[in-house]
Structures are given as C-alpha cells and as structure tokens.
Image (tube, one colour):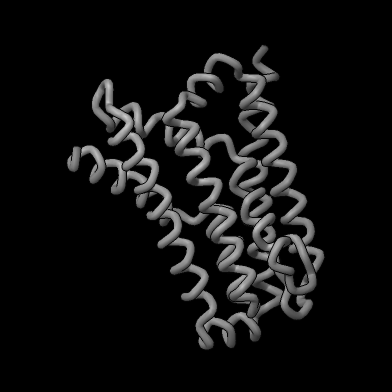
Length: 210
C-alpha cells in the first residue's frame, strides 16, 4: 500500500512542479498584490484536483476513452477559455494590480471561480489521474487505498499551490513585479495562450485525420 502511494505522490509532484496554467494563474495573482485572490484561486484549483481524482477512481478516464467527443468538447472549451484569459491579461498591459481574467482586483467568488474553471476545463488532468492510478495502484485496489490516493493528490496540490501563493506574494517578489509589470503581464499572457493552443491543437489534428 505504502509503496503504491509513494509512487503516486512522486509522479504527481513531478507534474505539479512543471509550470502550467494553474502555476501561472496563482503566481500572477500573488505577484500582482492579490494574495487573498491567489489563495482563493488555490482552493478552486484543488477542489477540481479532488474532483478529477475522484472521477478517475470512478472510471471517467475510461468514459473519455470510449467517447472521444466528450473529451474533445472539454478540451475545446478549456482551450478557448485559456485563450480568453490570455487576451484579458495581454490587454491589461501595465495596469495596476492586473491579474489573469481581470484588470481590477478580483472578488473572492471571482478568484475561486477563476481557479476552478482554469483546472476543470482541462480533461488531461482526469486522464493523468486515470493513467497514474491504473499504473501504480495494485489491481483490485480496495476503496481504502483508492480513497487514500485521492486524498494524497489533493493534499499535494493544496500544499504546492498555497506555497506558490505565499512565495509569489513575498514583498521582494512584489517589488520585482511592480518594476516589470507590463513585460511580465505580456509574458504570462503569451504563455497562457500557448497552453490554450496546446489543448486545442490535438483536437484539430484528430478531426483533420478523420
């Protein structure tokens, strides 16, 4: 049991520390002086992590494999949403307290929703958990082990994203961001756009190959 959970944890941490849309969202909010919004976005992101992991245990990965149109639809929605976030961030330019999806400081519900949508509209997360659990958990793993794996990846995600929110909210980071706000906004906007295109491109290639 413990060896399986350790393997799941190690693989999940390798994925977590690789910068992606969630990383950019939390880092940008915290570095722009919106630590509270960054923390609430963390809660939205990790709520989805728990949901995707639970659905993976229940077999949603197999559903996506059997019904590719569902996966493709989710990927298209996620890609378009990230492109919208990128456009808003690029448009904000050097505006004070700019953050993904808004030029003004986010309210609590907005911040949570932004984190939730950024993560829920990426079906690759569900596929990752389905593959990881299938590969690393023993065949016929009971509900106890499956529940422990779901709780483990949730806690991993929560610790990592809270760390990002606090680290990027450091006064030194805030001063660095303030001095380079316009360039960093454009860089983050461009990277978020790339992640959006990476969700859309495979779907377009699949449809073209038909």
